[in-house]
Length: 389
Ligand code: RFL
Ligand code: PHB
Image (cartoon, rainbow, N blue to C red; front, side, top):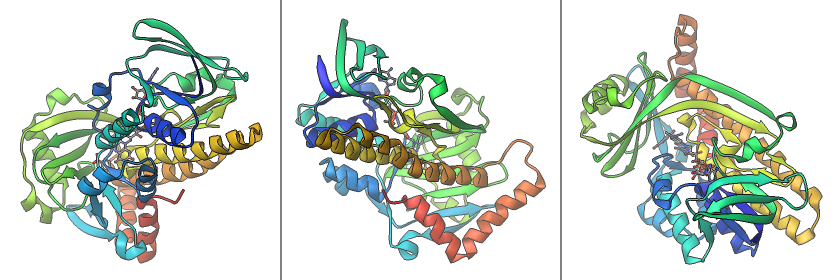
């Protein structure tokens, strides 16, 4: 088998990349380790930036987002059980859209199927070969058949634990990492959201986030220790804990109910530089991880996709390999800004083990400054809705 661009990973970034490349007549195929059902069972991101929406429109999947997504003109931040609103519309005339990653991925699978896109699921034992030469290839097992696929380029869209990044010799890349000493315990419940907009809360017992998917589906998170077990968190225990952390004035609207999903996510900031080596390019979580506090991970994966599509289009038009180095530079420039914002949100809103009184005061002062300074609010708003790409 042969293709121009071989994409490893059929999560949101791999699927979007394949759709946008096909649209400009670049031949590509996707190899995904899991079944489509498994990929669509993962509950992850919920907030889409304007740039992401534009890109999804370009990929031809706007209808359901328009009908079922929710425009949010702002969010609430809370300190010591008292909330205040950040009005993105008033501050910078922008908004975000609440529409789940699961739905985005479902839409992407649908459009790939409609376009007869080549997406292979349940592909095992993917191995990447000869990326530093002009004839790289991948070997893998597709439905029990050993397969070799030659390509011009191999793209790692295979997430943080994929194989692509580890194919690059260690001495050719530099990694930057911060692992946070806490996790997020998240639940999904078929109850109306507590608030029309998201609430991010700093509380002395830890961070809490109230989010949503639609009028009758809510997503809540609380900060816990990393070694927590979901089985030790009954729904009642979760609701009792989050009630302590959210703003008092919103609690009368909290509708509790049985959870339909419960999961624990560790928090990490991670970047690899550069985001390419030879004819291998890394995209999304394969190249960088942000803690979910800033709602940036999926959006960042999609801005990478945008830069890579532009780079590959230019390459195939001009057949000039020097354009390829632009991808990593352009992507990293935006990645670091999202890394900074997500880190800032994380260190400002979470309790650290043995946090000193000084550090506590610094968090409070950051949030109070944000509440009272329009200049600070504009900067926050610009980052939360997403820097342009
Ligand atoms: P993914 O989604 O991890 O997809 C990678 C795909 O590659 C496959 N794969 C392989 N395939 C073939 N061979 C191999 N050897 C393979 N190894 C792996 C995997 O099966 C998978 O299908 O990466 P991608 O596409 O780069 O997308 C990144 C996003 O999923 C991620 O950044 C976001 O979910 C992060 N995130 C959020 N992002 C936002 O923009 N806004 C949010 O509100 C937001 N909230 C979140 C989040 C992530 C969370 N968790 C669970 C980490 C909330 C949470 C709790
Ligand atoms: C979510 O709804 O899952 C969500 C929203 C905002 C975040 C993280 C997760 O910052």
